[in-house]
Length: 276
Figure 1 (tube, one colour):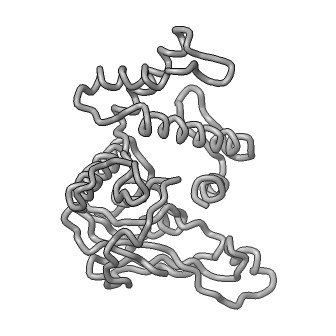
Figure 2: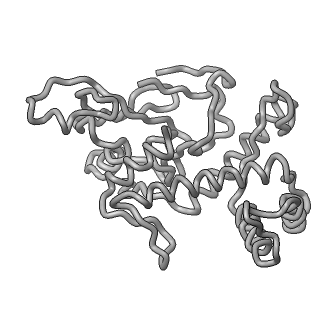
């Protein structure tokens, strides 16, 4: 298990450390091997490790079979009597093997993070739920935008995607901005902009105008921001369409949420389609 942390914590107020899982090879009886076989095909246990900001271990949980998903191990850790406790208003950093939810901040899925762009740092009440929420997702969006602004200020390159040597090239969207874009798309579809292959030429400029009307000071433009967001949404839709075509996972049209009868089936689907 290797955890990389940035050297400056000034933009991560409330972060008290990081966590991750690691596989440790074990010898088991023949009949038990299927339960201990991890996604890499090795016979192991899945161990959760938690470190503080000084990269000292503060918690470990061992014993789970290698086939157990990281999220399942974390859920067990936070629900134990003497398990992992995260004070209110604070959180741990984790990777995409875990759900982004209050007290556990995970990176965006389908976004590439380049470790060599960061200065390498050192290596190294009870929480009963690790379910995601809109409020936490919006908080992550705001934090991401703050980090982008800080990076842009430090590098003095702005947020332009032009040029091969641009340091900051991704504009994170906030939830209100996404809501306005969705409503604008609905309006286009009902006013004759739909074509056989999607939308008529020029629709991106119309969307840009609607975004500027809703957010007069916005820096969002038809290219690359809106076109990139449309591409991302199409990719996510195709991914969800594939997942829902399988067994154990579905979409509830009434509650507008994903439902599953098997948590492991959902966690496996996330790993296969959203992470790898």
